[in-house]
Image 1: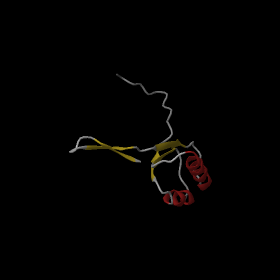
Image 2 (image 1 turned 90 degrees about the horizontal axis):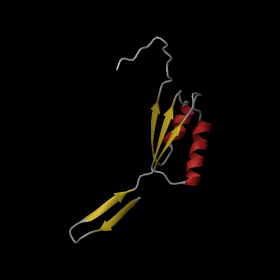
Image 3 (image 1 turned 180 degrees about the vertical axis):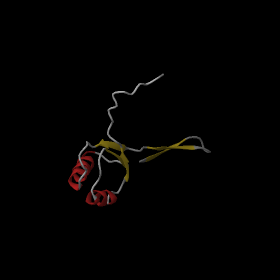
Image 4 (image 1 turned 90 degrees about the vertical axis):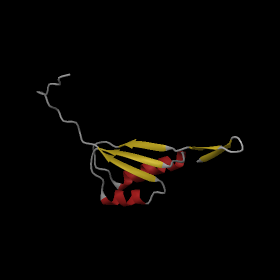
Length: 92
């Protein structure tokens, strides 16, 4: 959305409203049905301009193809699972 506010004769202000949704997936592989259900939920409730997917595992090729069809910007971040290191000492 974009709102224009008219100030004085020589100036105006533009305010852009950007709605981005962030979705965290678990440790299982992300399949096309998971992507479809997230998007169906989003589209039924609100209008967004962007989607951020945070993944801990791989995405199937079919799920990636489904993501490419979205009308809004999608960013994918893949994070690793934490590693347990019992002998690690932090010096601060």
